Image (cartoon, rainbow, N blue to C red; front, side):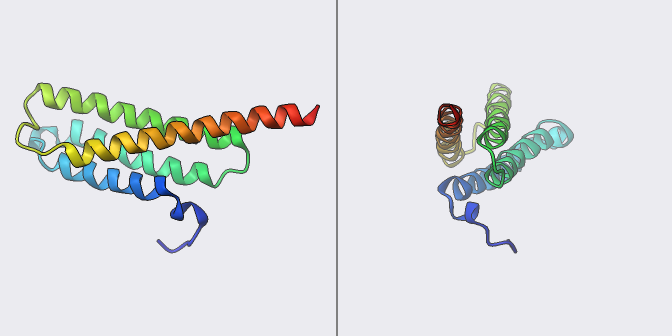
Length: 130
């Protein structure tokens, strides 16, 4: 918001931000008794996705960046599993899941690509030192 850093111009930054907003919107449709359970867990994990992407982008080494991106992707998978349970319980029957699903899939693909790039850069760094 205040810091105009290069990662804010990345496609994954804006898509993961959209994912967080969609996650918050969908949790507004969960029952009140889930406020301290599923709602809280999904929101924290969604924010974790976006924040770990941001923090990872600021790291200097590929190994460090990769670790933050892996944590982010793990949080994304956690949300997908929570949404499976919410769906099984009938909590989301009347909610259009497409915006959230699209943002989740796109974020997952981009994160997987970033992780691959970090792996490739690390391999290159090891090879180039010899």
